Image (cartoon, rainbow, N blue to C red; front, side, top):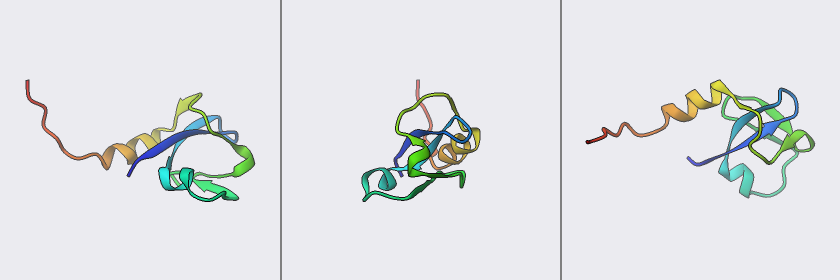
Length: 70
């Protein structure tokens, strides 16, 4: 599933939010992959600040296991 990385004003970290939340109808709050919830007025739709480690791990585990060839 594709994600957007937006900053939460609560912890000033960028969290991964599913693209369907970003492209859907207006919401009162957004829920990150790590279960961090942010009300609409507290989310900055920009990738600024450090990335949430829990989100990075959860998004990374969803990536397909592709072997690289040299």
